[in-house]
Image (cartoon, rainbow, N blue to C red; front, side, top):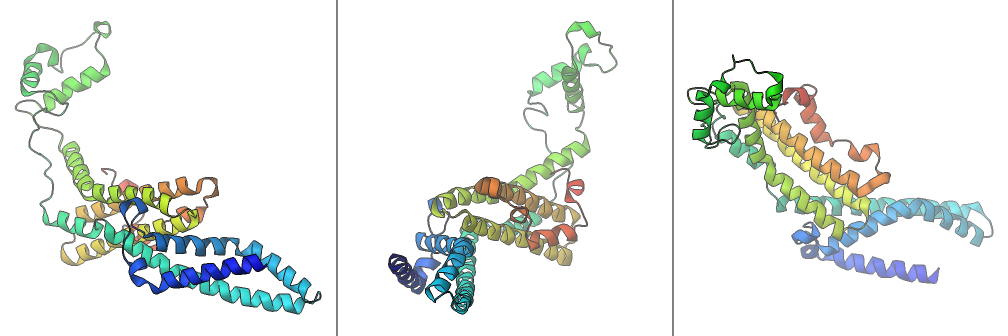
Length: 314
């Protein structure tokens, strides 16, 4: 008991010194630390570990206190009440440090809101984009012209089953005709490609930041529940940015395309972060760990049900 008391006192003094140093806990860490400084990561790990271990350890301590008090339950009950008060204080401190860690992680990366705003200032992608040098299937212009003029490229020509042709070559020939000289691509397919490229340009930097954060936090925060807390905070932050953009769009432009893009970006972020949470917890993952934050739920409800059917192009 004396050793445990001394260790607890040492940890308390170290934690108080770290809490007094706002510059240490308020400045971002390096990318290898997930942008969470070592002092803040240590505080999150210790507080969450105490919260996780508290039920088992607290129950044993109550029994020890009751036994030390001559078997009277009153002593154990008084200790239990005081232990619950201490747990409340620890949770309050953990919540404050967690908010600070999430803010550091979010501010260290690109803003999804600003990326969506920048995309809104650009013209909508055309359903008939300029032809690429390689064509739809990566062929050169000369190759496409040769195929277009070849009798074998005619869609009216019957092709026997035994001549080596297959469905893939047929589809490629038809694609070459549709996108060949004097032809045009399918407007719907062209619009889908343009929309997908537009979404990729918006969300790719955010997903790269999320991946870097996950790798850094795995080294900086060994307590997996604390790590998940930071990731869920970042998830909520990015979902709130997408929701804010949709609300702004309703007031300023009312563009269904931009609202779909914001929902698609939120969906991709959700897939990335929920996958990281599942990998971090392994078999200990629970349903509530993968439940979308409130901001993401609000965005999904705002977009009227399942976004998968609405934004299949993404």
